[in-house]
Image (cartoon, rainbow, N blue to C red; front, side, top):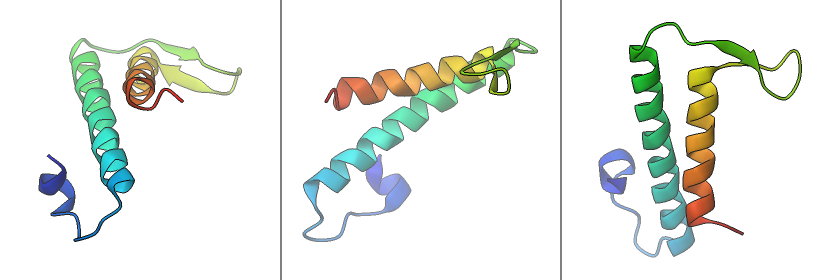
Length: 77
């Protein structure tokens, strides 16, 4: 999957950079799938997140939570 998006990592690439790129792609894939499913169900509800001016749809909030879950599974510290 990494090569499909970014191409072959350069010779001597830092393994951590490759690992983080893979995790970022996994998080983006989970978010995109959730957004796609959520938008297919119709008009999402809009609510506040961290403050009265920080708005997000229920689909947006669910996608954000899915990304956080993927990242915490792979990099818990």
